Image (cartoon, rainbow, N blue to C red):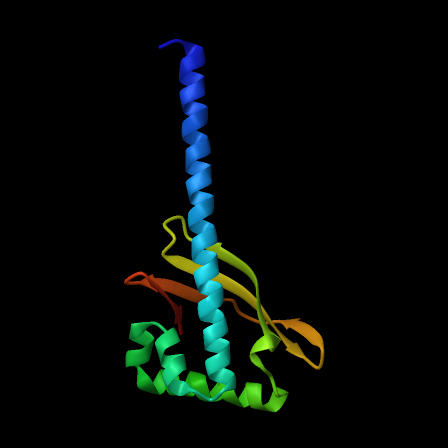
Amino acid sequence: MNNASLLRLLAITLLSVVFFTGCAKAKHEKIIKQRYTDGATAICKDDFAAFAKIIDPDSAKNEAKAKITWGVIRLLVGLGKLTPEDFRIDKIEFSDDFKIATLSTSHREKDVWKKDEKPTVWILVNGQWHWKL
């Protein structure tokens, strides 16, 4: 194999990796965005059962922690009279293996978007994305 053939093969390999990684990222982003929206909807509709399906199984097992988190979020949502449309994802960063995602988010208060203090961490469990409390 000459140098030109080797370079061509290397270029094709690199393009394939970039293409498939981009496809995987887009697929995971779409799923996480939907799960995040489902979570925001559950919180705004005061639906703890739906919220419990969004959080990761280990967090759900710690019922006290899950209910405290739920209560704090519900209090803030109630005080701010927030709706699911008042929550957004600003940025999603994935681990190299696409098993952990860190979300930078914002919420809207009185028509002003405010960055949330801490990012949320989502983990892939049995093919499903969950919010890690």
